[in-house]
Image (cartoon, rainbow over all chains, first blue to last red; front, side, top):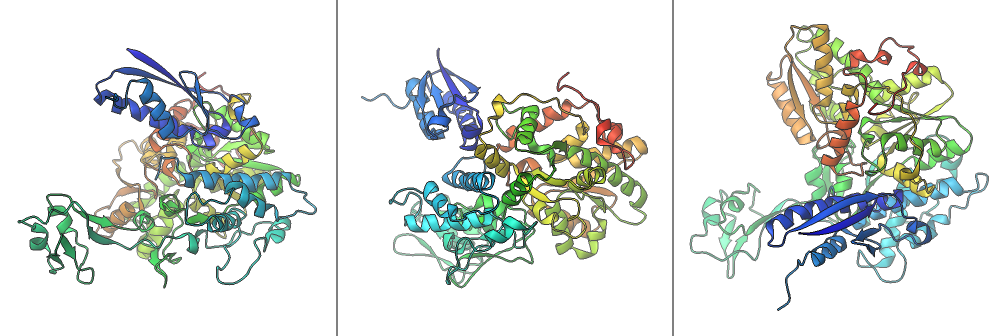
Length: 92
Length: 515
């Protein structure tokens, strides 16, 4: 079973800009995934400040299997996960 | 929109951060308040409107939000008043927060239609059309393409909606009015929402319900920061619901360290005051119910207490006379440190109104929310996850910390009653929305609450569902409960600090959470 690591920054700036809501959105995704045909495991990890917000203030920052997403929102993070899960629909 | 991060949440927090940043960095002698014009461009940059029809309107709304965040009234939209009007005054004097606390910015309001039923495209114009048969006032008819509802005749009973086999009839209402358990929201001549200040109990739930970000409350962050910067000793009293509010890595010890890094001398748990309140309320219950009062209502939620006073003035004597946990904690702090200022930090908007009451004013200087505090952390770039964990003092018992949860207050009081009078059975009724509080009061009026302890709260789930919170309610509830378990004391009676007045804060026992 494929495993996807989702690291969500839980630093001050990112939490203020909504990273806790992203954590909740990713957890809610597990329920959606359970209904779908593809099984994959989502690991969610809250990580300390990566320092990126000090250079560029476009948090919250999230890494999906290492791919950095700036100005992350629930929808962009969920889409990145679904893409890796082989989710979304296979294009014919 | 609770629990989802929307552009509204973002804007609200950006405004707090801008005001906090200005307050921390300004020249105390000669401040240039024109900073806030630039703020509106920082928050809404560019020429293209993102959220509304016009970028200029977006910025104009931001500027009114800034005024409210400065604790100032919004400006009339029809006549000229400078943005900075009144700012120099609040910079030099003490408290200036004035009612009304919760404000609708009229030109941000989308003037949503008031409660009405509408037929959607789901309507199949079916042969049975039961919608017409169930309508008691003959308001539903079958038009050319679909069912039609005559809004003049409609009495909003909702029967057509219930019966429609295609779920084609929708109830369309104002989110602000639906969130308002005090039924305080009406309309002005232009159809925009207005708050009836006689009915409003400042619970603040309309603020987080409005999808157009038209409602905001006043804030005292500017005054608090000015106080800190002018060298005043400030104590913070933090509400029991703080656990889990600032992210999964911000442990209670780190949050306290962060608050101290803002220049606050010491952080006291309001759970301590909650323990004091529990003891008093238990005593009042044992003494007065049923001899003098048919039932006893808890006193900690100011919206509930205000609501009960307004709705059922005759029954309001049955709301406990006890100081709320906020006041009990602040009083103990000021008895020991009369020259210090006290800021209450909590999830609550209504506490801002409570702090303006005559008998509360001397004890509580400022009230800010968790969300506003986050703005302060952000302005000072305080990285909570990197803070050195401070050793926490256990000011509060498990029961005191559970005051933040619906049911927790009554449980805490019942536990004290049981320890004082082991044979006594106490029936508890509880409500965690003003609408339910209203139903509970009706039952009480009918004599159905006799002998009961009534726990009233305005917010869903209790204080963890307050409008000034950052965390999702279930997540916050879990964090509060697990923090409560780390207390070495179970009930209010076990807490050595909750006893006789004059118990000094310094007598607290140090402990390490979990240790």
